[in-house]
Image (cartoon, rainbow, N blue to C red; front, side, top):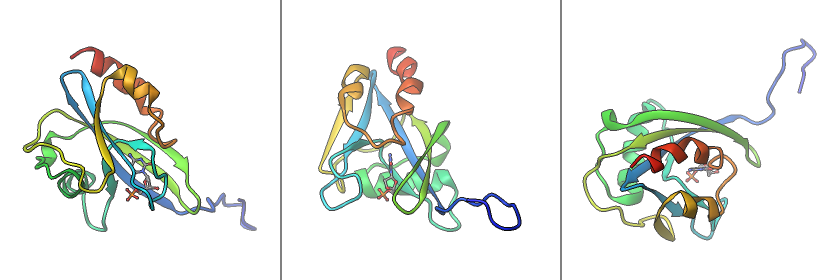
Length: 145
Ligand code: DCM
């Protein structure tokens, strides 16, 4: 949208979300979004919204604790890439981090299910649009395990 002043405006405010590729033995952890939430039934990399005043890494460590019950050192989160996609009323920007070490065994506290997916399984899962571009970035990382 272009205003009278000629400045280009994005009609949807930005929503900044962080997500983790937790990698173990050539597989990555994905979770299924529960009924009653946006994008229900789709498989996503776990994560969530950054709260005001949080760094992205602190937000992701907090989300992984809340969603999976695992303890994460924010310094162990390695930035990988980002993707963006329009939602109904926001424009989502999703930052992906790689994570190779954490404490605890992930449990589905918010999701309806968890899965450790290799590359072939990952390609078969229905995912939210913003997560899809991450597959090509993860392919060499999962093969290299
Ligand atoms: N989201 C996504 N992919 C992820 C994590 C989140 O597309 N890996 C989207 C789904 C929601 C928004 O981000 O539209 C906020 O996530 P949540 O509802 O989990 O807070």
